Image 1 (cartoon, rainbow, N blue to C red):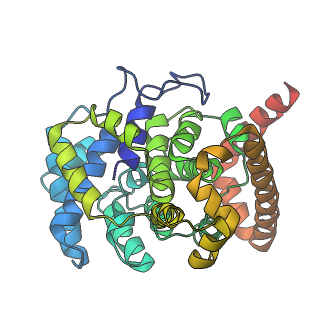
Image 2: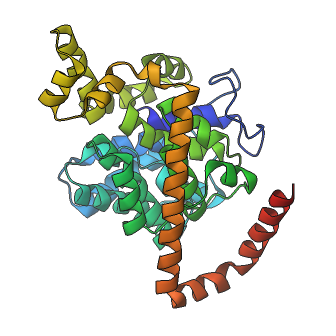
Length: 368
């Protein structure tokens, strides 16, 4: 369960535009540290485990509040928002209608601990409602947890993307390049989820996804945490990255992370990789392996030799695929907007100043 935590640590030194909005950087340095994203991720994990897998809403929420206040008070200078600091120290903490991205950056364990998508979304909703009970705050948590659940259950990215568009309606039409060009430091679910999702969908490995997220600038630790959690469920994390990241964490956090890490199921892709290697050792060809595992021979080869596909040629092929998906998403978005004119009218009235600023920056970038 290190995906969100390592993404947080890697992104920590670049927050508030202290980086160059590039993917080329040293993964870990002495300037890195964990932030509130890690503290609350650990707190949510511990609270859920203590409540139990089949606990009801009241039990889950009470357990989460106790755990979050305990960890928040233990690490009071981790970088919490002003309203959340008061929540941590309140005698009777109440939700405060927040749509902040805190609900999504701390939710990753929910995506691993439950046996159905429905239960995953329910628990994610409860985890948000204790503080971030605005509909956008709840939606952000549900979306992040659902993506993690689908990824670790073996769903491919195209299916995950379709589910996100259908269930949550986030605009995924912009590419990484376009998101970097209009970057801004916004700590809302409305802004952070599309960025984290695009970082995940356009990435080709755990490390690449986190580099995508951090390269966007702004709230880099939280973008790294959300995207990193999704990437872990889909790709797993190389052991050397986990080992290096552990050096930044207190032993008491590691003990919680290791408990969940040993309890969670392996990703479907990790199981496939192991199976392919076993069958290769038995002398089977990739075609034979494909028949046994009900996958193509080409995919069996990719699972066995991923390093051969991390080339400029295959990166270009991946880019073409992303461009094609972008065109499809643009067409989908246009069709949706035409079908819901009243919603778009209300949205524009609520966001017209931000929209005008976005259009201005977009025009400037096109001119440059």
